[in-house]
Amino acid sequence: MKVDTLDLFGTIWTLMEAPRRAMKRIVLARYKNYVYFLSSLFGISLVYTVMWYRNLGKVFDDLFILLIGGLIVGPVVGILFVLLCSIVLSAFARLLGGKATRRNTFAVVAYSTVPIVFSLGFILPVEIAVFGLSFFDNNPSPLVLKPVEYVILIGLDIMATVWSWLLLVEGIVVANGFTRVKSALAGVVLLVLAGLSAAGLHFL
Picture (cartoon, rainbow, N blue to C red):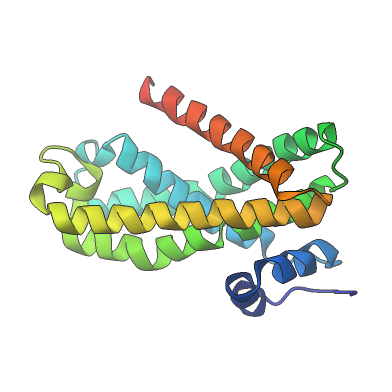
């Protein structure tokens, strides 16, 4: 199956309907359209997550300034983060006998962030509408203000993250010709690195 270009909405729909078929199209596509666009949106979500994790709402006097800061910094962070993940994942996959190029790995990682991008577009606006700047602060904690709403929304964010990880594992299977066990192992390596990065942020 030869593919020249990727249609963004068609590929996203196929990712939801048939993830393996979508990842195969992504890997075989000559032009990896929208990988930088998706990486940029993922980066915005990542920056807002860091702001939430570090309770940076207390640093900003205005929610608008906080959001604009994320929009400006996020795309650069996202592209660099996806690139770094691709380099690490490609190197580890090669150790396991994988055949994916770094370019294909970059595309797989970028498209696997689609559920997190959905979270940015549909869940974050609700979180902001419900909690405002308090969502990024712990004085008082949003869990104290509206515990049911907070747990539901954070639960949806977690589901989006798990979905992204499952898409990543499927992409690793396709790109490298791995079994799911090897692919899951590679995915766990990225999770561990992300966990270590989060732990490092906690002490900054």
